[in-house]
Length: 57
Image (cartoon, rainbow, N blue to C red; front, side, top):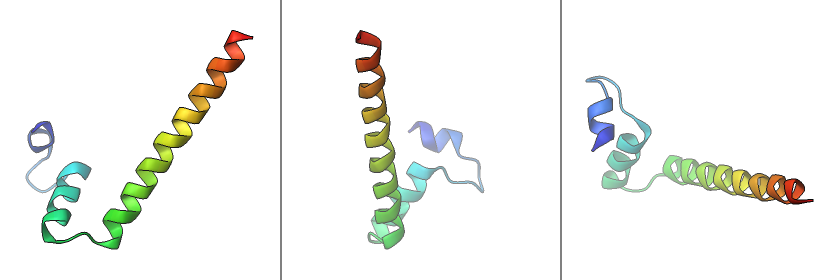
């Protein structure tokens, strides 16, 4: 809901773009975006784990 309020009349936020693309059928672009997002979250989680381990020692 917040994405609809934040998007201007000619702009689309990433969630709105993905929602519209999924309704038409999942394209390779959506798969690539999802892969990049999952990769970024995994890297952030691993870095957080490593930094927390260093602080404990």
